[in-house]
Amino acid sequence: MSEPVKNTLLFLVVAVLIAIAGFMQSWNTALLILNMGLVSAIMAIGVNLQWGFAGLFNVGVMGFVALGGLAAVLVSMPPDPDAWRAGGVRVLIGLALGAATIIGAVLVYTRVKKGPLRAVGIVAILVGGFFIFRGVLDPGVDAVESVNPALSGYLGGLGLPVILSWPIGGLLAGGVAWLIGKTALGLRSDYLAIATLGIAEIIIAVLKNEDWLSRGVKNVVGIPRPVPYEIDLQNDPDFVSSAAGWGLDPVEASTLYVKLAYAGLFLVVLLVILWMAQMALKSPWGRMMRAIRDNEVAAEAMGKDVTRRHLQIFVLGSAVCGLAGAMLTTLDGQLTPGTYQPLRFTFLVWVMVIVGGSGNNFGAVLGGFLIWFLWVEVEPIGVYLMETITSGMAEGSALKSHLMGSAAHMRLFTMGLVLLLVLRFSPRGLIPEK
Image 1 (cartoon, rainbow, N blue to C red):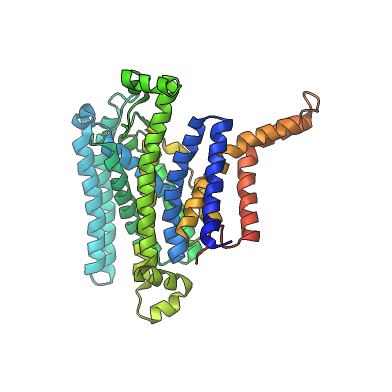
Image 2: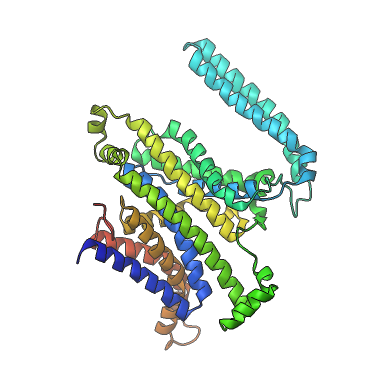
C-alpha cells in the first residue's frame, strides 16, 4: 500500500468513527468532537513545530493556551466603566511602574561594570520599585474588584469582535514565549521541560488569582460569538421553515447550524496553519531546523546560531498554541482558569503528536482528531463495558462497585494503552516523518 493511500485511509477511519458517533449518539456530539478535534489539531501542530522540527521539550503548553483564552476576554468583552472609574487608571500606572522597575534593573545590569556598585544598584531598584509598584497597584486592584464582584469585579476588555482575539491570542502567547525563551532556552531538555511546566503553572495561577484581570475562579461568561446564537435562529421564521423542510426540530437545527458554523471557521484556520507549517518544513529554514534538531554541534560548526533558531521556533509554536487557546475559549463562550491543568492536558497534546507522528504536520493533525475522539468516547464505552461485565453480579457486590467505579479511569488507561501500542508497532507514529 502506497503512503498517500495509507494516510488517506487513516483520516477516513477517523471520519468514520466520528460519523458512527453521530449515528449512535447524536450529531451534536459528533460535531462537538469535530470542533474540538480541529482545535486539538492546531495545538498539536504548535507542539510539533517545537518538538518535531527542533527537538524542544515544552511541557508548558497549557500556559500558552490559557494566554490565548485571556486574549479572548481582553479583546471581546465590553469594558466596565464603573471599574475603570474606581481604579482602572491606577492599575495601569502600577503595571507601568512594575515594568519600569524590571527595565531599570536590566539596564543597570547591562550598562554598569560588574562590581559592588552594580549589585547595590540592582537590589535598590528591585526592592524600591517593588514597594512603589505594590503601593500603587494594590489599592487600584481592591477598588476594581469591589465593583459588583458577583457579576463583574474586573476591568473587562475592548469590546471588539471576538474573532480578532484569535491572532491577538497568538501574539500574546508568542510575546510571553519570547520572554521565557530568552532565559530558559539555554537549559538542557529535561531542565527546559521543568522550567516550562513551572512557568505554565505561574501563568494559570495568575489567571486564577488576579480577579481584576480575568475574574479568577469566578470565571468570565458570556464571551461574544463569531456565529449566531441559537435563540436568534429559533426566532427567525426563515430558519424555522428551512429546518422544517429538512425534517428537523428548530432547537436541534439551531444547535447543529451553530456547531457547523464553528467547524467551518476552525477548518479555515487549521488549513491555513497547516499550509504555513508545510511550507516552512519544505523551506531551507525547515531543513536547517531539522539539522539543528538532529545534531546541534554539527549545525553550530556550520555557522548556524542554534540558540536564536530555537527561540524562533519556540515563539512560533507557542503562538500557534495561543491561537488555539483563543479559539477554544470562543467555542466555550467562557474563560474558566480552573480547567487549565498543565500536566494533564499537556500530556494529552503530547500523545496526539507522538501517536500521529512527530515531525509530520499531517500526523499531528491525525493525532489531534484520533486522540480527542478517544478522550470523549472511551468513558461512555467503558461504562457500557463494565455494565456488561457486571450484569450477572449481585447488587451491592464489592467487586461490581469497584469495577463500575473504575470506568471513570478508562480515559487515562486508554491513552496509555494507545501510546504503548503505537510505540511498539509504529515507533515513529501513524504518519511518520519522511
